[in-house]
Amino acid sequence: MTPMKRLRTLVSFRHKTKPANEKPTSFPKTELTLKILTLVAAVVGGVWAFHLYQLAGGDGWAINVKLETKVLPYHNNLRLLVVNIKSLNSRNFELDPDKGDLYELNFRRFPSSVNKETVVDENGGELIQKVSLLNGEPYDFIPGLEMDNMQTIVVPSKTIVSLTAKIQKQTGKIDKKTGKPDFDYVLSSTVVRVE
Image 1: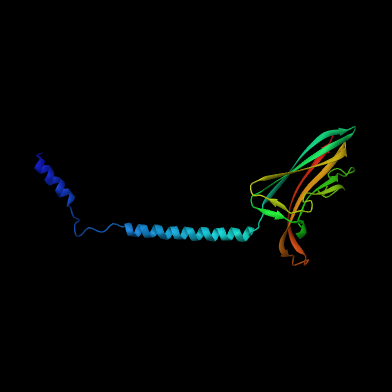
Image 2 (image 1 turned 90 degrees about the vertical axis):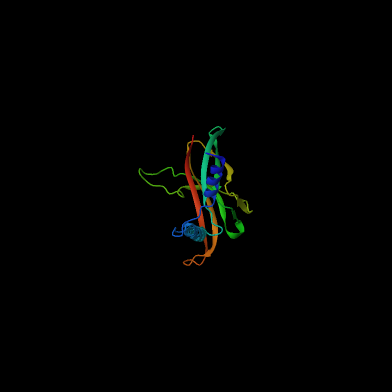
């Protein structure tokens, strides 16, 4: 192919025009459809977020509380019961004792004379000690951070102790039945045999 023929071929490719009967491409319709779908997705996402906010509230809390125990020798037939109260919350909230909020640990001596197949409630037995973990001051739960509070008690060996950690927070609403402030609470309980 001579250089002149090559040049004519290149020029003819550059100046090709569309035939008059060719339909325009559907890109404007596709772009418009994608923009509308994006807008619909944003609106649905916003409605869903508002719905979750209505369910949980602005100060909603979803705390997990667990108890870990350890028994250590103390003196003669006495043992030191060490209790770690671990709490993990996904949202920031505060407990304020002035508003009636509670964060406490109850130690109960398990009843010694229980008949076979008898169910004992977590509040059953003699209350040995009730400990407030607030100490009269507000307590902040930081989101995503596991809080660890430790309490100890000396008990005789061969004792069965029931432990209950309770977190109670005022909701800011009034209970329609009682006319008193409404509370939400979370409990975690365990039973320990002290050897």
